[in-house]
Image (tube, rainbow, N blue to C red):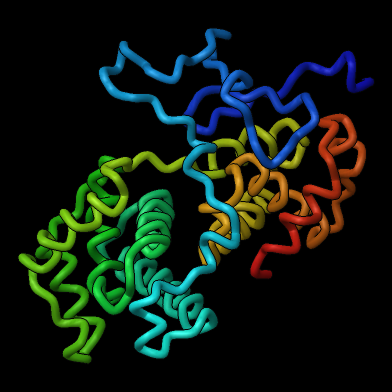
Length: 274
């Protein structure tokens, strides 16, 4: 089947359905986002009573993300320290989340909140050991999988004996308000997971083994700041490419039919922590 006659693939990233049977570029323009009925979203979605934000406008350049706050620099925190602390806190969130039994999407949202907070706030003022569980608490509410703050405190004390982790319920509730302010009260996060399922099915790679491998690779992307910098559908495509290489599956023709700029895709692959 030629690219011109191929049925367009419609990707739903939560912001609407995006037709990727065009040249894929790192920035998706608002006029390319349509809903499942073909109706273009307006930037102000009056029917939902809130300002519908273009999720691409929330993306940052890598240079903007890799900035150590001046207050942290004064404390001797280097860029390498900054990245390692965020990775450690992402693992911290995952570890606590396993015990309170929330979905992976909640973990991904919490990690993204945490990473976004530190694009504007200093670690020396916003202690990561408090920010991390508070982001998990906030994400559980945003993703409608609420975890009580007292349950988080219970497991944190059970998992960590270090007094530096000993925060109580009031600490979490107070930090929640600070995090909301740091996030500008915008809590919607667009993840690659929904695009991933659609793309795997379209590529004929939706058997259980490939799905598990690719899903795991997407999970690994949250060890870095990729979600703050790159659109979710491109992260999903890069993860499918990595999985196809690992499992020796030839997806060349499929990517050609999508008319994906492979140079752009290879760039995303290079950013992956694998």
